[in-house]
Length: 240
Ligand code: NAD
Image 1 (cartoon, protein in one colour):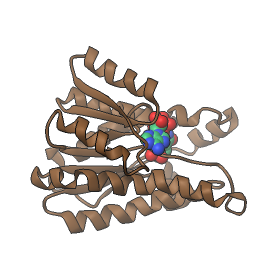
Image 2: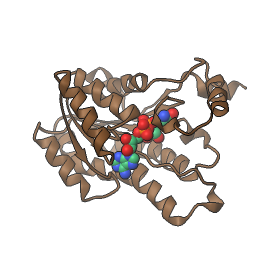
Image 3: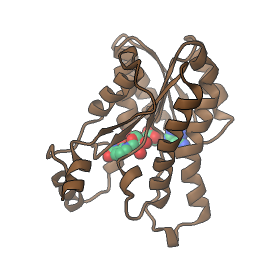
Image 4: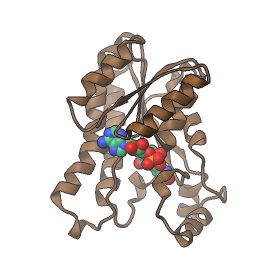
């Protein structure tokens, strides 16, 4: 089950997990792109279905779970859906703040609740997509940074409470070239890339590889961990 699976890191994760043999439910608000992701997987011989869903709405999860159960019990939840309003805290409306937390944090809580019995019964795994900005903050994005930070706390809490049956880990991507960067100017992009040790943006597939690893049995002794996938952005920032 991949939320935010219509685009970017979520779409790459859906594609990667399907290539490894998983039947994938792509859950997203973006119907056209979500259908296209699932269709591309099927065209490659994989199993995938798209379900339109706003992860922040409890009612939406019934359809997502029903679609998953047409394949079988849920073994993996990869949570990528997010909302981000670029507005400083003193100008952000309460409605905007609440909406971002509903998608980025409550959406993960709702998703976990919806599938936890399957995960418990089948020793499943959850991979939360946080951000390097969970640790550093990021100017103009208070709700985004706060919700991504909260995901790290939730990761540890769920890992302890639901272990040993369920493993829960988080990835912290740095700059990864996805539609999330549309509208960000060339100067900001260059500065960002120069801030990495790798000297470039990451690709969605590079984050998907980390998510697939944490979701797989290969990572059977890894839980409650935060895996930074940032081309060395964090370490370069710390050493500056
Ligand atoms: P993206 O914009 O390509 O994809 C995000 C997807 O989430 C979209 O398909 C969108 O329709 C979906 N979505 C938004 N609101 C939703 C909702 N309420 N319910 C269901 N789906 C919803 O973005 P991306 O860059 O692939 O981001 C994926 C994850 O990676 C996010 O959690 C983001 O915070 C994280 N991340 C990305 C970067 C980066 O540089 N791209 C860096 C750090 C963290």
